[in-house]
Image (cartoon, rainbow over all chains, first blue to last red; front, side, top):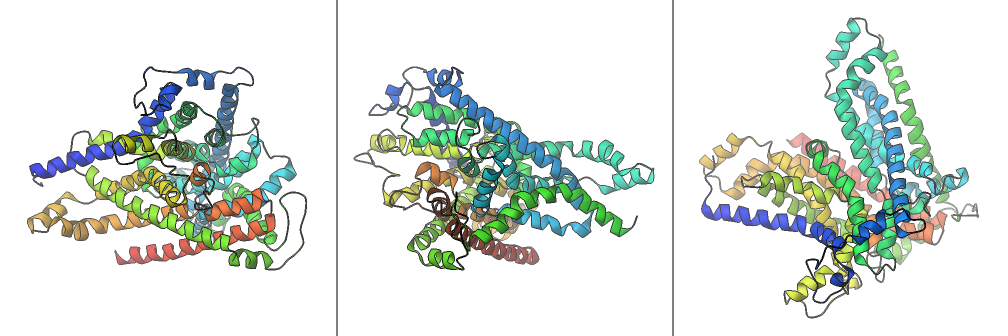
Length: 281
Length: 293
């Protein structure tokens, strides 16, 4: 075992402190802004710590009074939830059988590379026809239309993750059941899918986070409360003439809460997923 | 069971995915190619065939060349910084110290923060009148008067790169850390006994384990950085004076702000081609690296 000199140990601890500060400072500042009275945020010199805890923006954004800023925020929150949930569900439904087929059939595994290649496509390469297509179908500014478009990202991504998940389930288990006379649908339903449940859950969470995070297509294809997602609503706030920066920060905190909680709870699974190649930009 | 039946069954099971992919990816891509040879508008005009006019106009225009330089600069600097910071953070997290597990858990936070929230947060930090960066630098005596970090062409791109790095270097760190933990303890110990210095140990003992995963992270991060849109749109919309206008922002403006679907499509395909070249070059690099080890 390496013997650590005192100097080295000091250096390690100092660096760890610095890294903690770098990671935490912006996040803590976002939270502090959200609970600081407006006067504190525009004071010079700046008040780094709120003179009193002001939760009024949380009340504003989470109140459902008609035509208020809160109603608009809640509407966008619900739109984000709906779009992400629908797109994730649809992606998993189409990805599970394909991922299993690719995992168990070497002769078609080349098709997986074609699927992964589409994941590299810049969204701008698809945006114009998708816009025209959605307009033609009357699906612009609709949560269904946006969820459909999100399949361009989620379908290849979940197939890729699920395939490596199925790879880790030994096919001998399936062959053994086959020899015992089980039909394929029984094997999949009673054996493989239950074994793959954790991988499917992780893939679904990843997909949900990707959809929750998406901005480009949402910016292009939604225009008002009927479909506008949280990311677009926050970008509007940030780029608009809102004079209370605390309100913008509060919207940010609320939008970040679900993925951050998922991230902390699912840490282990996320890290192993990330390191196995599913890197999100 | 015969092999043909198994292949057929596999294709049948992949059918729903293939139908979806053709509908939302295949058809739009083909249609982008068709549009790129027309003068179609986004709404209304179908547009007529104009040959390669759009491509010539876009490739020779100063907007494209400038956006290409801006994009390359953004991608190279931010990814390089993310790699260096990520590896350094991973080496640190691979040491024994109190609070190590907690710090590793914290690393997931910037990654989990939605891109738009991250952009908004940094936009607030850089705010010219009330921003935390101005306040901190002034209070520390490092700055005489408040500056508009995102409002000056000289600093806007650097400010964006810092915000992007902060979000993405922890991911590189986690990937590198996982690779570091795969290095067998006795190998590093043996190298130490043999008198290898710390730089040599890093170069010859640790690096072989790190190279593969880092290369994958490098590839994917570069491609993502080359496609960058969200963070720039939220923080600067490509300004000031177009100093942060990357290729994706340029395509957005051409196709959607100016509604020129035809020339926008040609520009989008040029970007796609560049990303593809990057991806293929990297794939070759990866295969070579895999062959070497």
